[in-house]
Image (tube, rainbow over all chains, first blue to last red):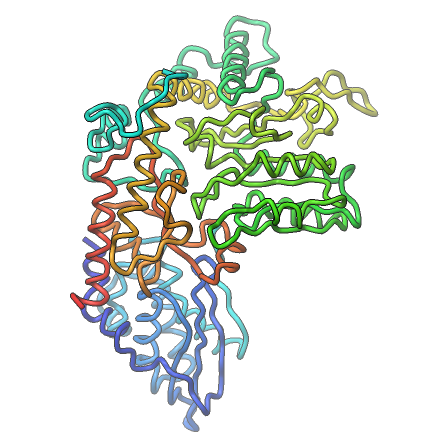
Length: 153
Length: 423
């Protein structure tokens, strides 16, 4: 079932050995993402290159395996992308995670992050998966700040 | 069965023996989903077939708007609500059915109390005391009315054994205290608070006492006169009844002194162009059409509990909660959030599994068809005070058995392996 797909070796590898979980010295933008329903707290940093493309993306903070792995996959994907391309990918991820985009050809653009598509069957985990992506989209559209996803009870 | 005492160890094979389960077949959802280990009854209980049938029977044979009709069906619907009200009163040891107000749920009952009492009871310099372990439903209403009236919200905090001590009560409840509102049983820690002692201290300084009994009434015998409270709130949906029915019990003189919370139909004696005369209690607090079918079905749920024997069910649930805590304490890497003494738990045990996020734990357990809750359990100030972001919670009811708890304990071992291999 979907869960076996989700907690696969690829996801667990991003959790155990993240490539982009560190604090950046020379970030050009910093944006915090908070998910009050589970206390997930993510600080996303981006360094824009002189060519107008994302030169580096990294994150710190804490959260569940789904949100941490998602942040790591996203940081990898975004290197070399223009802000417009990055925002487009964030929106595509949102569409995948909410189940409205299922076309495998389009989801290929998300590279490894497309393995999180099974989260669309788990409404309670959608906010975990999209925390990093929503944070990046907010950062690129509105600059530094804090983004909070709506919480439970 | 009430009134009999039971030996310390349940009779083998008897209804309180958690190795057997004579109750599961009574619950259609559990009977039709044999693989499910449902360990989230603190959020909402499952319902026996007789409750579901009662709800349907109301609409099929008795459906009419209660209170106002003069024809047979409406009289029957009115009688159904009156009978249920009297049954609820007996169930909680209240002598007067008029002291039982039907609401939608515990949250509405507590909002009713806070909103109704605050304008005349509270002002600058006054204090409202609650515990740090309140569910948000017994916390935010008091935050709101304190902010509106200038009163101060004071928190009673438990000691390292999760006990609210007499010293803490003496320290926080004093001449400025106008009202004390406490959870009887914590929905996170699973501990029973010393409500009687808190109530006595509050009454000694002239304060009113409100009890959130949402987590206690389903598991232990609650008698309002023994608790010593003035008002008490709980929900039907954790007590075999349907969702959408709640109870506020209040002492007659207290309820009569309180203005209505919601106004409109069915809560008045007479209305003119310029004013209205309120109906007597309980109708004064029951504006609009009640969930009569739900209330009728709730009545059937209480009858189910009594038919099985309240003492038997309570003994079985104590055994289950105790076993749940003992098994969890023994699982490697499990940290119980709350007392590790199995006897200290009523219904629920919260925990974390090493550094694994509770959402991951719950999702992976779901793969094994083990249903638990994970998150902040609507008690964020408690978790913040304890220095944790979130936790897992497993909770039992009498329709659970030892095998359900074993499934959880074994499942946690597999969750650990997903994250850490066999280290």
